[in-house]
Image (tube, rainbow, N blue to C red; front, side, top):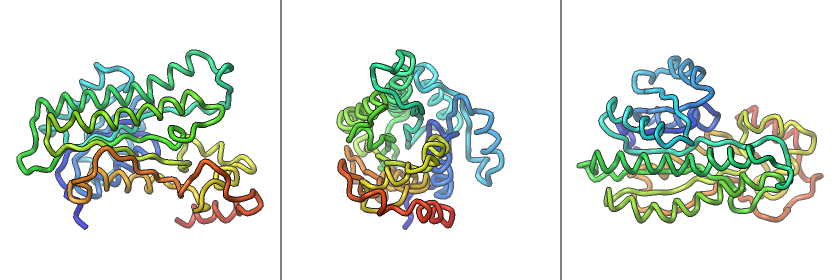
Length: 282
């Protein structure tokens, strides 16, 4: 199916990470033009992009999503290079590795997580909507699309990472509010969210290597496997495609193997070696 993304301008935040790179590859494969933002890994992002066959269709930008002025500058730079921004994926975020009860977590950790995940998504959305106001709707009627990357932690909570759960839960409010605002700028504009569960990226690989970690994660999922970054990217492609999801807005698409808030399996029912082996094969 042609997703009608060829030639569209797509801005992806946090493009230096595992899901971010998978997003860039997926949109590039559809023929999109890319504005990719990174922060601390900007040099690595630029080096990786320079090796891609679609490098001439890409612009790398350094920005801290928690700074509204920097996000505004990113969208202006993308507009100057490509003429406009049609699609934005608010992907940048952080997950503190150390497991801590809320009263043990320091103020810097709590504020930093909220600034990156919640405020960063808000500033990204704000800058995108401002760019739409400047550019006006596309003449072909293909509406703009904004997609947030959430987390099942925002729905079920996450013990020892309460501030992370809060930062992702707040995205529900953005999705449900902005779906009603974007149409004032573009009558066919849409806002949605993809909500991953445990996904194999560099951010969580160390945690998943711990004995029993995979079994603990998979026991709440009918599909006893872990998501890959490409699984998340494909879901985002669907929601951002005017051809595939033109009448879908204000929705949250969960990509988590059917995860529930209750245990379905005993640890003994999970073959960790088989899960790891399958990831290697795929």
